[in-house]
Length: 497
Image 1 (cartoon, rainbow, N blue to C red):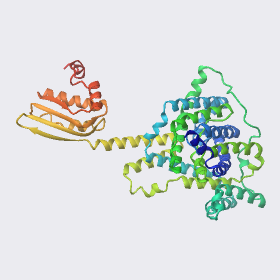
Image 2: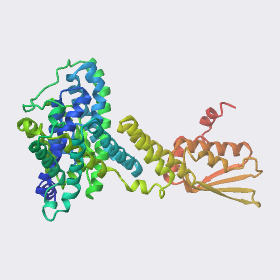
Image 3: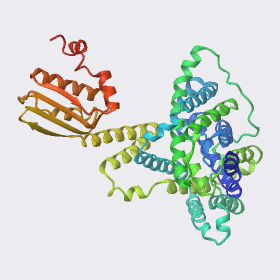
Image 4: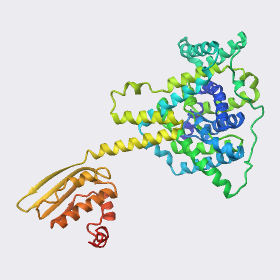
């Protein structure tokens, strides 16, 4: 079974994976250079990182067909470290990032993705689509009309080529776009911005490089805060991207293995002079849309990237940016969840608020972690508020025995505990009170405290109180934290009065 699964991951879609890997490799080059510039390091740092991370995650990652490399989200977190301490400290932080991510994988933090709601993922996807599009705008401002014409022509090739019988399905249209636009500009001699204008491409293979930093406590205090931020943001983006690729391909992935794989890849990148990276939603979408499904596509992307920038750099330098901008615009259009706009009228207000808040915060701050944090926090608050409304009480009075019974239904926790207490009439003259919790569940110490207060107040009024129907889980938390039947603890709560 394992052998079959491994064979399928690597060789189940050879043609599609090879062609998709070629497209991704070409699209990775300007991005890796751009992210290096953002981080304040030499372009080869981003290019070497992209090769190492893609090649390593192809073997050890948990999501076949997903592309990991140097990313903008990670680059933004490195700026201050590079500016204040230099490249060697960045390499040390990259190694530590990898170790932290491996630890997170063993702690099974990948399962935390279950706390991220569909509306947060939709917001994350839409925000990334907007950021990908915005990243192309510098290439489309203050330029000649040739750039607009070639970008439009590139988009035309991307969207129309698949309609050509037979060949349209065999070759990925983004690859055709890059090759045809490059050939046109070389033949006609159009003078426009190319990949070579973005920065000098490396001409040597990456070398093993141990970070040249002192191995002492002060070094750790410098790099640890950056490494922790990089580890969290990197895993967040990787796990979100894995979830999106899961949806695009209708296949599952191992999120905890992905955590470890990203960590191993970042250690590899740090040892070969590269910066920390993570999964890239844009490149992963290019890969999937170009027919890539298996681990081979990720390996091809990394290896071809290295071959292109080291051995064919003179040719790669002549690729017009307009062709790559057209590909990235296609990615942003394909990434954006257009159905989410149509569903705004249909979905509940809380769902829309979570989705829109995630988009706004990510686009505003350019930090994916902030947006997802806000989305998850709002989602949790809305959920808690919704669940608290399902808690209600029924009461009945047996006049003969002067017994009042309160029967509760629903979840009792911090947000519903006040309403739980509000259902009791403490001034009613009854000799016996029964609190029936057969259909209720106690979740936290706030709920237990409310039950304590209710029992104490009734007893102060001279009523006898019985609690019945507690399920095992609720009984455990009430026995452990409740004080209404513990005189010594009760004395502390009441302050000795």
